[in-house]
Length: 512
Ligand SMILES: *[C@@H]1O[C@H](CO)[C@@H](O)[C@H](O)[C@H]1NC(C)=O
Ligand SMILES: *[C@@H]1O[C@H](CO)[C@@H](O)[C@H](O)[C@H]1NC(C)=O
Ligand SMILES: *[C@@H]1O[C@H](CO)[C@@H](O)[C@H](O)[C@H]1NC(C)=O
Image (cartoon, rainbow, N blue to C red; front, side, top):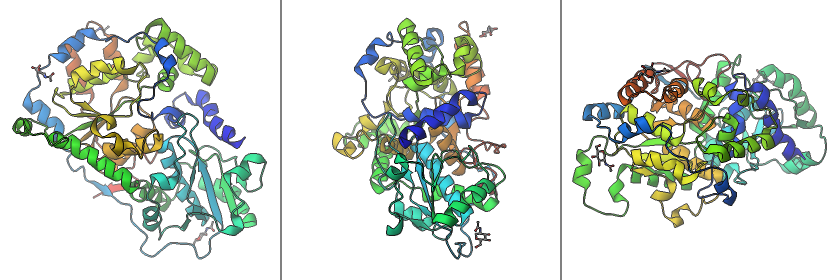
């Protein structure tokens, strides 16, 4: 089955890639990056003991923290102009080839953000080949079972229109090629299927291997396609085109944007929610009123198991995660060679909700901070969240801010839920993610492009600080502040091999 084939591919890469190629590791988490609201398997409750706070010493101080107004208001100051501006320009004259070499089809797996990068790369590959792109097919993710198509998620007419001078795009194949479907490729080896594209293939690889297929058959279907185009040694216009797709052409469908706007509105004007009056005067005088932080919390079983860290859920948790690792990766999780302490020292453990709460508190966020939680299901359930909620009582999410009727269109659809979170994240004053991953990377890149504040946790520092059980709150706070001074959205130039979608400078934003 091609489906199986496609989905196994990234997993195979995982073990060997752990040496440090984050781009290769993180995409595979994506299968369970986004969780449908309210999903909890009954068996979960036997898999962990109710997690207790693990850092009770500093937590106690954090709960009693007094935040000075100046400290708190500094946090909300938008990033200053850093002297960069987007430089993704449309060609002065349309640069469409005189004659298309044929049709390029791609089938994209992964979660929403992995697919998003696949879409950008597909446009680039079609451009390299002077081909016509067929709107990419989004595979159904085995975990989340969301069958939403490109058109269900993205505004397809906007997409085609923004790119109309760069590349030809068709919504579907003309009749003469209608045989070229996903099902067709699932049942046999086909001459028009390209399945050997190496990870980070060069432009020449496509010219050497795909162009001949296009020229012979008029069509080429590339799968697997995730992460199959290099980030280096490509012409500037191709790099800029990738950014143009990511930051300009990909807009969510109107109902997602409307729901996102409603959420943003309710976060900014909390009292408008049910029209209640009352504490509005108080709100206005409060520093940071009208502002909100988005916390992307990825703490699901897949992530927890893959990290091989200990999260304080006792023996039951250890056993459950070990079992999961064995079932999914059969011993290929290299992290499990290290002790919990070693992993924490290296900053390889995702931050727990408690830890990210302590980080935010140390950074100076007070208990009036409006925190929007992006992505819901947490390994360990509500109990795991409770400490975070104590630190930040004004915590909201999609569910708390909308009615059932408003959520009806996105209910149970992982990609649409993720799209709403992405939209809200792009409209927040500050974004922070508890662990690296595709959602984190996508938003870091997009927010860099728009010069928006984004806090990147210093995982190694935090790992070390949390291991020190005798540390005082003031020492903790001071180390955290120092360790995050330069991690709030300052431009970082892309290094070789790094993703253009995470680090758009200097390819797609230029000195102004
Ligand atoms: C917020 O913190 C202050 C100061 O520590 C405390 O007096 C107040 O009760 C807290 N508010 C909430 C809602 O927890
Ligand atoms: C694509 O078209 C451009 C100009 O129309 C041409 O210079 C280039 O060689 C073509 N590339 C391929 C692969 O056909
Ligand atoms: C723990 O933190 C304290 C400061 O609060 C420091 O003096 C001590 O050396 C640290 N211990 C270790 C093992 O790093």
